Image (cartoon, rainbow, N blue to C red):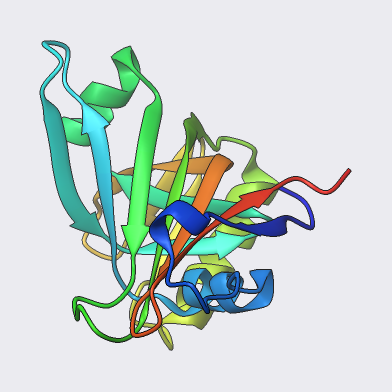
Length: 169
């Protein structure tokens, strides 16, 4: 979503609330160390798990092993919701990104993402781009996905507000 415009949902916001500026929500996405992803199993049950992610190029990226439940779920239904924020009721900002998870397989994109992962965590997450994904020091391989947002919501707490970001005209 390029240059999204914030829209306050007054139904779920305090009377004196203002929409959360996009720059504030984007900072939460860029700096988050942990996201929660929801995928859907073949029988319709949700699967929720924490993971690390990288917000880069207006997309949210994550990895998973080929045999992990989320990878199996994504092969049948690529729609996801990814959430990050603060687990306090009275302060902070929670951000939800909904969209379709698509595999990243282009080697140049994988190299760029491996650099972003290493930079974000001061080298704690070291990946090497390989054909179709990542490998890491222990020899394991990971699939890489990008989620281009179809919907982004921010939930401000303290002064409660719900902001939806819509594409600029």
